[in-house]
Length: 240
Image 1: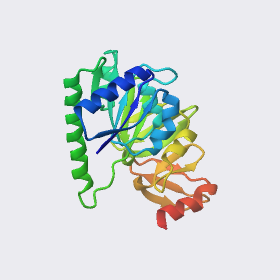
Image 2: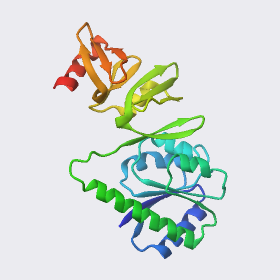
Image 3: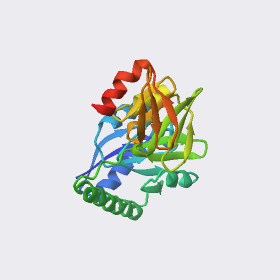
Image 4: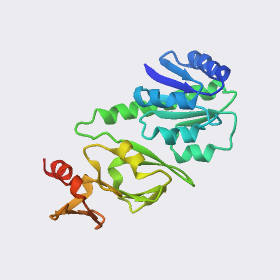
């Protein structure tokens, strides 16, 4: 069964889409319909779904801002909107499809078929032995929203009220959120904050130099000082 959620600030439009989905696909279950992007944030962080049918023009947070606020997500996104001006943005975040209201039944059927193919591909990848899960994070910038894999992050540095992501492919992405925001979002056994202004990916550490807090040498040859307060945690994560 394909698990789906609809987010559209117009309840009538959401129910119409639900009706059309019921017509084209019996193996799709709409688990919830939300008419507020704010109210949908926390539930969508907890729900395990396959696809989100997402409106673009909504109060408070539009569809793209919603994905930005959501941070990481594993589900597919199908935009459903009355406006065709956002197609390029949708392509930039690798959306599965972009449907215009009123949604044509055959176009919706085609979207569902593409969704099935995408999910089948994911299942094959998921069944491959020893293949790690690819977690993504959305980074909003002036030019659009970058979707990157956490594994590709070497470090994140604070720059006033901005955060600068340094990636393994030599890209540098500047995002208008604080390092504290990303510490909460990224924090795990591998991505940790080692001083007031830097989060590092321990998988990209090639050397630890002893000192009061110590110094890390990263795969991009940068050296990062470790605060004394973070030293014990760092050494535990690095060396067990």
